[in-house]
Length: 360
Image 1 (cartoon, one colour):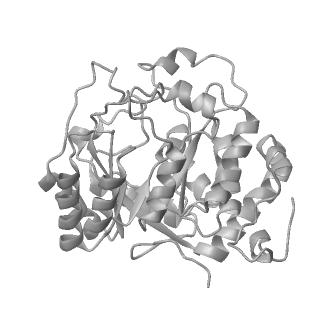
Image 2: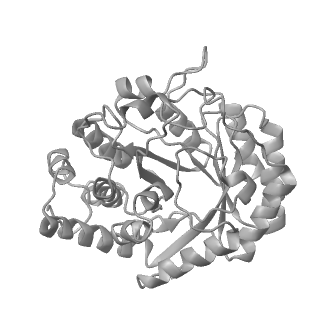
């Protein structure tokens, strides 16, 4: 693996990065030798320790609504999933979850939903204000593609971060799996630029192992992490949902496997690309390996886990993909489990909001 005495970009007078050239990224993506991969894991863990330390930050996830107007071919929340019972949480229910997050010692609450226009701009703004005033937590929003005016209003209300995954840099594949709303086509990469200009910490990421995804496009994905200097990078395997158009392709041929190894290779490369970023060990990764999924992600470059605080009666309906990893029904059990798992690998749970650390 390419090693250097200092980050590549710092020699160019820019932001730090340890990502090797694209041709070497391509080799790493197809590497299967355990001894070679051990070098990658060690390097990613070394860079993680240097830039974000030993702390694992816990973000309390609240799945506010499972309504969605989009028809994404991979997602169980898609509008075309007619048999899925729908829900929207009340503002008081969201606030109760935020209070739980504070009580558990988390520094951030993540408000996530399908792309639901009934969650009006003024309603979200008021919820953000109440969360900030009542708990003092950092607020991350993940509400899909929204207008610049909405994003600006939420930032003014106090939202700190916004997560919008671009899913794949392959524009042909993206269009195939993510149809635009009539008359409302927006570039996700342009949205990321808008978020940065509004002062958000900006998160994005990809799915690994999508049907039709190539290693070449996955190389481009990793290079984009570096180009956009993301503050958060979320990487998860494609987990098929049987009630979606991609569900019929579950056993079809794929160039890029949607497995644990492939996902953690991309996590490690993301850490090298964006040393200062917050990188979660995702629930989708843990779904592939219920006993060690979170731990593997944390040992290969990640530094964030998002325990689910959504009330149990709603959680089972947030059906992005089936069999999401969680062995417990209550938020208390989930939070305690995550803490035990973090401590089992010799790491500590972080305190405070855990924002991006920018080098001087």
